[in-house]
Image (cartoon, rainbow, N blue to C red; front, side, top):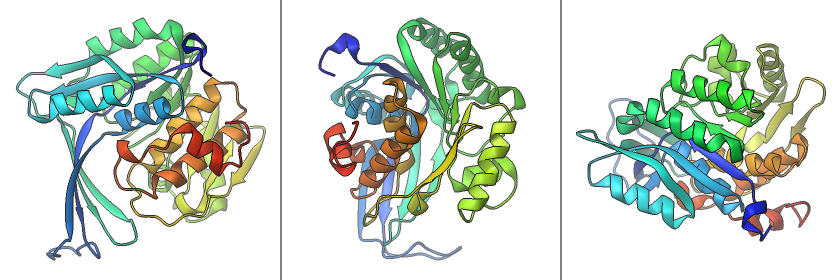
Length: 313
């Protein structure tokens, strides 16, 4: 897809964070101090990660969101630009910190995250207007819950009315209004998020299937439950299936779900059917966990193509 005008536009409304990451042989128990072995900072935020993921997969990508007027704001904006993501709709909130995520990573790649929304929580009418201006040329709109749920729901309704594919990653866990589901083309919770939405544990593929079909009943067009090392379960209410994970050695699982969503969004925007789009997502997620970082670990299209055996990507 070398012709720029032929490449689909993927727009992401969501969080832009600086991630502060510690690495240790194991994660501490409550009240325990563990001596770590490494500390790094890298650009993250689910919205920003997914925007970078879409750009790396060959789409035109635009980020809509806000950073603070602290030391991290310019860094976060410049890093998005360096990943070929448009930041024309990234605003600066005065007297506010940028979004921050404090992440602890254990030896097997497991992680615990404390997030401070900061400037992300100040998104409002400016971002709504920015989305509205972009929608006429947008193929897919990526949403998460790092900005206000009300704002996300309003832009989803606007996008759905214009026939734009709306992909909702319902994280971090927050209540989702019943009306929101009806504007969603594809909802993509992980196990923890799916459990919060449907109220029962997602410990295996069968439980994921039950959750996915319950979400279809709430009005979404398709549901994809991201199961980490178990792959993903998907359904559009008619067809359904389980896509196994690509076996890899996990180094850092942060942002694997964002790589999944970005790759799947590009596939769907290019007219790829949902089952194959989920394969793209699984391949991108697998590649993301093999390297450290959030935006840094988003794979490029050639790598995803290679992992899929050169088919369709």
